[in-house]
Length: 323
Image 1: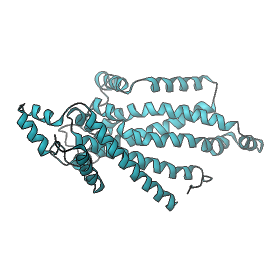
Image 2 (image 1 turned 30 degrees about the vertical axis):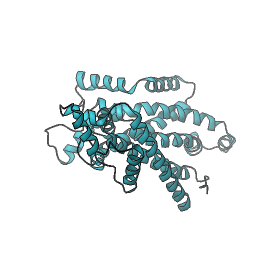
Image 3 (image 1 turned 90 degrees about the vertical axis):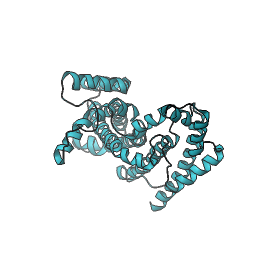
Image 4 (image 1 turned 180 degrees about the vertical axis):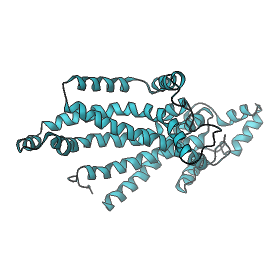
C-alpha cells in the first residue's frame, strides 16, 4: 500500500505541474489586460502609467520567462502576489478555503447519505409508486439549474417564510461567540449546502438504485436467499455493500470537483469561499490569484482521487493495490 501511495503522489505531482503550465497559457490567451484594468480603476488611462504597472508586476516580460518564474514559485509553495488585492495569493486563499471546505464537505455528506438512502429504498421497492416518486424527484433535482434552485430557495425560505438567512457566512454585527456562533453559521450553511447537495443526491440515488438492481440478479444473492437469510441482512450485507463500488467511484470524482463547482452557489449566497474569490479574480483579470485558485482546486481533486482509491479497499477487501 505504501508503494501504491508513493507512486500516486509522484504521478499527482507531475499531473499538477502539467495543469499549472496549461492553465498559465490558457489564462494568458483570455481577452483583457490586468494592467489596463488596474489603471482604469485608478482613473488613469495614460499609456506610460499602464506600462509602469506592467513593469511593476513583470507583465512586460516574455511568456516563457513569466512561466519559468511562476513554476519556480509553485515548487517552493509560493503562489505569487495578487495584483488587485495587494496581498499574497496564499494568504487570500487560506482566508477563504475554510468556508469552501465547510460548504462542500457538508453538501457532499448530505448528497451521499441521502442519495444512498433513497437509492436503496427505490431498489428495495422497485416498480412501486414509491420507486416512481423517488426516481421522478431525482430527475427533477438533476435537471434543475443550481442557480435557479438557489434563487427559489431564497424566495421561499428567506423572503416568504423568514426561516433562514439569505446570504453570508454569519450575521453581520451580531458578534456571536461559542455555540451561538456555531448555530448562526449552521443556519447560514443550510441553504447553500442543500442547494449543492440536492443536485448530486439525484445522481447518487440513480446510481445506487441501478447498481443494487444489478447485484440482486447475481448468483451469490440467490444463494444467500436460498440459505434462508433474512431479507434485511441480504440487502445490507450482500446487495448494498457490493453495489457501493460504482457509487464510491462517482463520489470520488465529485468530491474533488465540488470545490471548483461551488462558484455559482457561493456567488448567489454571497458565501465567502474560494469559488467566489475565483469569480472576482476573473472579473478583475487578476492572473496570479486566478492561477492560485486553480492550483489549489487541482490539488484537491488529486487528493480526493487518491482517497477514493484507498476507500475502495475498505469497501471491498478483495481489491488489491496494483503495483
